[in-house]
Structure formats: structure tokens, C-alpha cells
Length: 275
Image 1: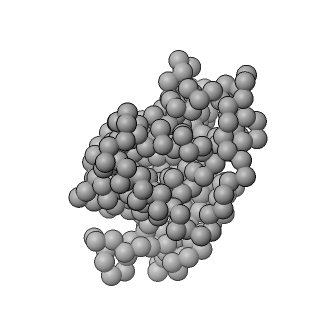
Image 2: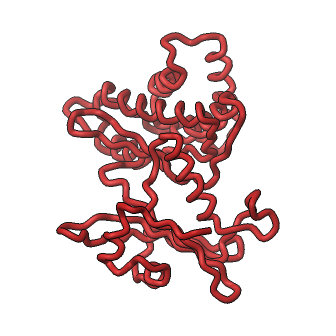
């Protein structure tokens, strides 16, 4: 596959001497996530700060892997680097107009018997994962419900758009959903970790999987907030027979997971807390 370099990022990479595969591969950068050793190889992520040609700096995430493969329909026997699948999904999401990561660089190389791949994406400046955001709220107090609902509405619209395009995320955890509050009070949402995304012919199939995953891993949200998110996703004000069936199906799947314990704390707004 031909190397990919974003036109917008090409001069920035060149300014930092990182236009070539070897330069990115050899770049000394601390691990943002410790390398994952499996599938006969390894895969790791680093966060790097790059100087801008004029002034200032910007952040990127540099992902490198070696012999870390998965079977794809285009590579059914030996498999291909998992970053290839992730890069293809990023490009597909963006082609569908679904907010996600901005790709900076992608390339693969064969070095002897080893197969290496690099995927670089722009840092989501100002965005915070819903997992981290909720953790902060539990420690310091949640913002007024109106702000929470604006975030839920943005995430619901994002998920609904994915499913309208037949995209099932498969790992729609709060840690993979990011939100940013703009100065005007508007909320932007992004989704990451697209490697396991799949196309499905039915929006209902997509909904059962992704809504269940989010509900299962959002136990600290109040039931009323989760129900509001559900209705926002379906764009309804009152539960219809179909909505009730879908809600019961998701709740039943969540209830069958024995390791989920009742949350010790639920989100509750505190006066004076706005973020």
C-alpha cells in the first residue's frame, strides 16, 4: 500500500525531520501506553510534541508496531498489520462525515522477516474522554444537568450517524468517546479506536451492540441520564413499543454480566460546578 501523508501535515513533518518512515520509527519518545505484546509481535503508542514551521507546537500520537497482525479479507492467510485496518476505518469514517481522528501519516515496511507499520494521528486538543470526564465529576461534582445533556446529545448524534452508515463500532466504551466544550457552550464529540469497527446491514444490530456497550460501561450515570441519551439517540420524546423493546434488550444484556457491581456513587449536579 502506498504511504499516506496528510497534505496539511507534510510541511510540519518535514520541519521536524520526520517525513521518512525510518525517522519516525527511530524517534525517541516515551510510551503513552506501554507496548502491547501479542499476536506474535508488539504495538505501542507515544505522544510527541512537534514544532510548527512558524511558531508554537502541536501534539501528535505516534503508533508503532512490529509483527502485530490480524486477518483481513484482503489478507486472509498471513494477516496484515492491525494499523492497516485502523487506518482504513479512519478514512472510511471521515468519508462518511463522522467526526473521528485526523490521520497524519501511515506506512508499512518489510525489514527482513519483520513487518512494521506506523500510524500517526493528530492529538484531539481540548477533548476529554467521557471516562475521564465522569471520573472528574465524581470527584469534584457534576455540572448542571443542562450541560450534561448537551454532551449526551452530541454523543447520541455521533452514534446515530455511525449507525445510519451501517457502522458498528464494537468497542463504544466511554474511554473511546471524546467531547469538547467550545467557548460558545456548544459540544463537539469524537470517537476513536476504530480497529474493530464492522459494517452491518441493520441499524438495529448496530444499536444493540453499541448501546449495550456504552450502557454497560456507564454505570455511574444516573438512570434518568442514560434513558435521556437513549431517547436522544432514537430522536423520540416518549418511548415507543420498539424503543421499549430495545431498552429492555439492552438492560437484559447488561444485567447478565455478573461482574458488574452496583455503583457506589451516581452523578449528581452540585451548585457552582460548571465543567
